[in-house]
Image (cartoon, rainbow, N blue to C red):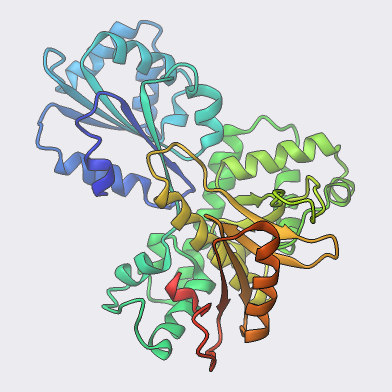
Length: 386
């Protein structure tokens, strides 16, 4: 939150995007309430009334509507718009108002797919884009009001981490105490995603294929994608499947991890590994093995950590997997550190990782163990300590 607050004084528009129910609306409402200026308005674009305003051809008439809502355009003004993707003409409108008036825009959208395709050129050089992800484990503890350090005793943290793996990091789900209500909230987030984002943002002729693909992908979490088999299963071309995957990625349902290729000792192929951006959503789609869900959760933690460490550089997190010609792998490489994910990590895993790391000059290696480990090797860590 504090990161966004410091950008309120800059002239550029702030754009916050992320998956459904990840907390975008809550954050910008907080920013709106905390803003000391009274020269501000908040618009929810799911409202037909507000959508009608943005359908007007005359941009000055749109500005008049804002003035009627109490905005004084002779002074620095603030317009907060939630779910901007429902206003199809909004990029050009915002560009016009930004260029001609002293107006600061704070916007949310549920899809970088939409923002890239509709906002990229019109707001080029006029915006800061922030992506919001489900809570990491430290944030999860804070939401649960658990005053525990990530260095606390293993047994104190393990049962909480099990909950985090099963239900994920969507804020409303974390705050819900009843298990059945957690499941209902996850179902609501997933239902909203298909009813709103898929229907409103995609132009695919057969949207049922996206739903079928989602179930096919869930069982493959943590695995390398076989594009040919997937396209045959759906009865679509490879290019159509690539388009589906890109859409699911840019609407924050899934993520794809490329193969690390800075070595002649690996098979360099365009084969990516698949992960879901929230383990709770993944668990509601398909019940998969504990090892799969643990690896998926670790990916989410590494992704959030990498994103935060590079905040302000306008870069997507760079996470890779490594594979030798023999087929042996390192699960993740992030910021030049190799990570192996094991339900029970051992000294053997550390030794294997260290041998691999010499081939690609990694800075360090870590084995992430879910189960308690008796080794004193500091390269074996728990998921709480990432």
